[in-house]
Structures are given as structure tokens and as C-alpha cells.
Amino acid sequence: MKKFWVPIGTKDFSSVIAAMPDNIDAIYVVLGGADSVNFLTQYQQAGGQAPLVGGSVTVDQTILGSKGKIHDVVIGTPSAGPIADDNKAPEWQKFVAAYKKQPSAFPSPSLFAQGYYINTTALLTGLQKVNADVSDGGGKLRATLASLVLETPTGKVSLDKNRNAIADNFLTEVSKNADGTLYNKLIKIIPQVNQTLGIPEAEFLALGKANRDNPSCP
Image (tube, rainbow, N blue to C red; front, side, top):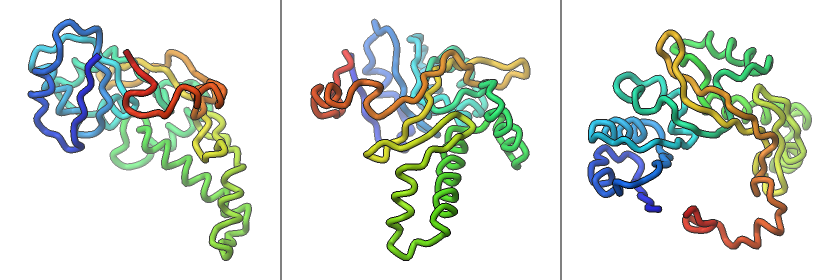
């Protein structure tokens, strides 16, 4: 396995693409925004044929809504993240319908729209529970948020003791609608994923300090 780390805002990925081995099984791309568009476009132009696995930001609607050859590159790309565009849950469908009323909306909410909505809902709910009283430096508000359990458009969301979210995650694959737009097709829902990925905390910590090389991804 070979890893390439690039600064945010990289425009020319030619040196990275040239350094990639020929006999690879797949490329895991964790780039967002213009970085993702630039890499995927340049990889396609260079004749790259390896299958792609996308990070959640790599196949977000902010990328899938881009025009050009990128469509040919990302179709079929598996990923996982906090949303699936064709999720049939009534709560998600209601959120999508409300989202589409906004000017210049994507065909489906981006993961950023989903995240900002949940975060804002949590804050407003917390403020309501403490009667907007933050005179103690926000202590009561923080305690309330720590114990808050929200029912959201993408399922139940709560916080662990480290204030990391516990929430449903969605395994998806980039597919094409009849009108030519791209979307993340739901493959499987993994319920209530936590910081230790379902592994008991003591066992997870015994794996060692998490960093770019540990746990290993051979």
C-alpha cells in the first residue's frame, strides 16, 4: 500500500498520479471540493483505470453536481458516510423535500447540509431546555448537549463521553438517475456507529495510539 498526502488547494496532481503503481487494486480518495474534482478529472485524463473507493466528502453532492468528465469517473464508486441520497425513511424524504425548496439546491442535500441542520437543531434544542440561560459560562448548556438524544432525518444521534457522535452510517454506491444526475445509492445501513467502530473501548485502545499508520491498512 502506498499513501499520498497533499495540501488542501492542490491544483496539479500530475506528480501524484505518475507516482502511483500500475498494479493496484483500488485507490481510496479522501479529497473534497475542488481538490476532488481536480484529482478525479486529471486521473481520468491520464488514462487511470483503477477502481475508486471514495471518502464521504469525495462523493458528496457538492462533487456529484459538478459538470464534465468527472461523472464517468465516479459512477460505481463505493463509499460510506452520514447520508444516502435515496434513503426511503420518511424523515429523510421530508428533509429532502424541504431542502429542495431552497434556491440553487442540489438534487439531494449534501452531507454538509445534513450536518449543519443536525448541529443547529441540537443547539436550539439545548438552549430551549436551559431556557436560553448561559449565564454560567454555558455549563448547563454543555451538560444538556452531552446527554441529548436527537431523532434526526438520518436516525438517532447522541454523544459519547468524549462528545463524539454516535449515529447511523450508510454504505453507498454512486449511481446515475434517469435524468443523468448522480446520487449515492443506499446499499446498507450500519446502525449507531461510535468512535471505536463498535469495538469495546479497552480492546480498541489496546490497538495503540491512532495515527496515520496505526491501525495499519495493509
